[in-house]
Picture 1: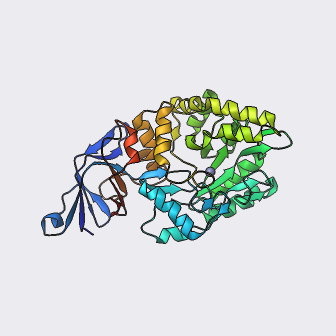
Picture 2: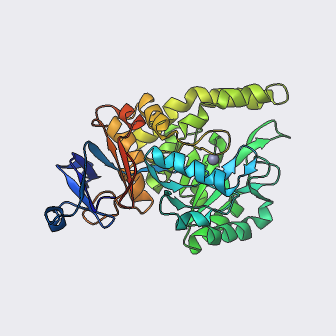
Length: 370
Ligand SMILES: [Zn+2]
């Protein structure tokens, strides 16, 4: 392995306060960190690896279940393969959005992406995918959320709405009073709360309860988007997942026709719901929802889908890189930042499709792909 990596650039280092992308001509990776000062070592006989291409700070998948498969928790070898697949697409920071497996060991594996765990999903009894969540009734929501806040890395995942079989439609899972107390309890533990939500009906409760982040949020409309923006709520649209709503509708049609019609309506409105968020100024995060039914390694699909519904390439890249990293407490490629980055064959601001074929991936200063 070379002592120094010379990134010949250009380097899309960060977004500045005005939203402009700061572009540097070239950079070096030295002792795991990025530097823009040509290191003396590079001219003192140390081996230098030259890497050609456009450099972007490592991608984020903000909704990615490492350790979870279609049938519940998976073994360590499977979880490792999931994380490697994400890493090789340039995803170097994952917020897991809930996992029933204990994946703390990932922190000790320097070749795997950095992982922010949310503990186990907190779900209402019999109102989520079987075998995944910690299923409780409202009176136990506060204690369960507190426990998961302590188990995770600063995030708790709550399932906010799901089909109510008695009603035959989506319905909020929690009384707003209990949800409000649970969010306060998580905040007291220093954790933020993100909530799974499909339905329009749930969003006022999430706003009232002070939930930090919304997953899917297909029920968004201009009014709720404006309120979310004002409250600093961040949204992970997971378009790769919500594209499947027609399948969910078909599967539920015979027993739950009202639910099926609702899911079709939400499906039809999903491009506009994302545009409503953008127009209101809500920060978006790229999340693939890999790990239940969906495979890992789909980050480029999600970025492409966001552009497909109307984001500019820079807006979509911000949701996948600069902005998402900042929101989750990771640096971009400022001087001295950890060298977590990917190298692309062309400028992704011209066409995000280049994310599908990174020429190199550097994690903690080591070339892990390329
Ligand atoms: Zn999920």
